Length: 315
Image (cartoon, rainbow, N blue to C red; front, top):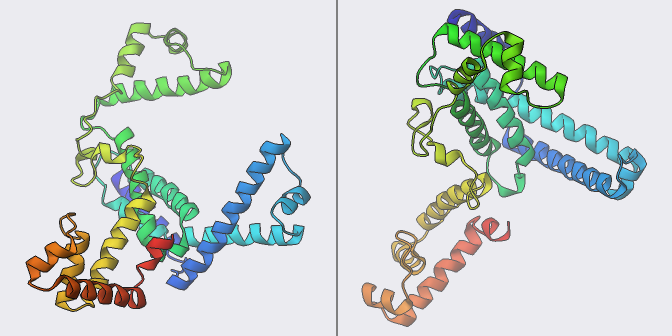
């Protein structure tokens, strides 16, 4: 089975290997087209709500202030751009998925989940932020894979005969749900597979595991479960922007003189979060308060001219 999976992964890598990689300018170009596509679909959704029905192409085009030809061209271009961004990064998905092998989950399932995360990343990518697409997509790919591991991997493997029973029970659950239009009861499942209701309940309980919010996912040393839960103050955009901002601040400060760098670091609390007043910095550096003010102004003016930090203030 392991060899079979290995062969399938090898074949998949051969297949996706024919897709060319993209340079940064191509990522920006395609990213803008996907953004436009997302906006158009947003227009369509809002129009559907207003009309209480699916809008015609003519109605959709009018709502988007486009001709019908422009609308169809924009949709086709956006779909093409989305496909190109996904295809060019499928090898990246495989590389990330391989880091989570040997977790009692099929590597092909991890690749599939990672690909779904990649697609989500393509849809959410904002090329105006200035960072590389792969840097942004990594968060979405890893999150998709680790959430799947949290839901499907097991620290303790169940005996094969129990796994087979559970597989049969799940299959019956899906079939009955389709037939009944609702979730089947334990009694209905038990009658269908000719097992006592209590035994079906015991089998299903085996699939439930208490999870600590501080435990690592399937033995991984990287994310813990609480990092995968929704957070009001830590969206992927926020996390990535803060990370990129730290890097850009360090790069910008490196271009200043040592004295200017120290003044800005103390003034804005860049190391410890404790911002000092001009008077405190003056005392610490044995300079006049006015000289500190001049150096601060000089350093900030230099950063405004030579750095890209303004993108964080306008985004």
